[in-house]
Image 1: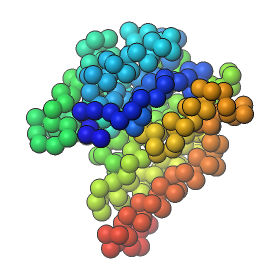
Image 2: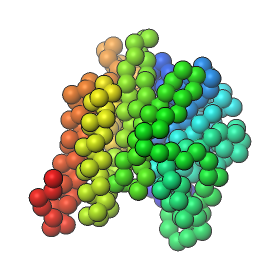
Image 3: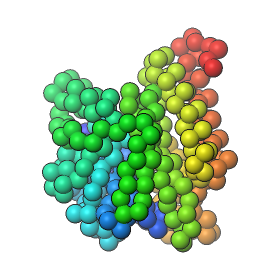
Image 4: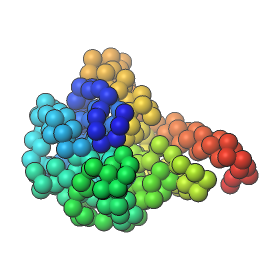
Length: 265
């Protein structure tokens, strides 16, 4: 896959919870969190074409009006997550949310050699700080800055509902990991902190912004065909959720060991 240029497959738009919908594609996620006062969209895929030809039709298939998009939260400053944000900003007046570091990252990439050089970033809008919230229609999304995958990766905690029962979802915005010793170490610290934050919030629903990171396409098909046995496969439970990120932390330690570094706290 070439970021910002193409996608490698489509999956059906799917209702994951009473108020949360998957509207992305095979390898990159986009989620629509529906509220009484509009939609909070999480990530915007690779480019304008994917926003227009994947996200918008998927919303309509699910009975959601794209004109109700009020916020687009960009989990991190790689083009496969912000590529369609400018289109949604200009077409529907959506407010775009990113951290200061990753706003800078998006802006610096434009016009330079690299996979995102052809992507025009959205106009700088809401600058998220660690601990900020985005509230809409009685729903509040808590934001944490979790560096490692990018300097200002945003991670999200928010309520979802299954048959009216509340669960807490946690989307760590940088499960892809780091690139070198410094960012691997940042990632380990962020994963440890994320487990503390999500444990305190009672998070029991796992979401990732790349479907292969948790087999979410397969889980979506189970939901689509009502083949879950009455158990939503995105509800992991608190212990299993914590263990998922402990394993990611262990994997990052292995990456460091391969660089010849040991004794990581």
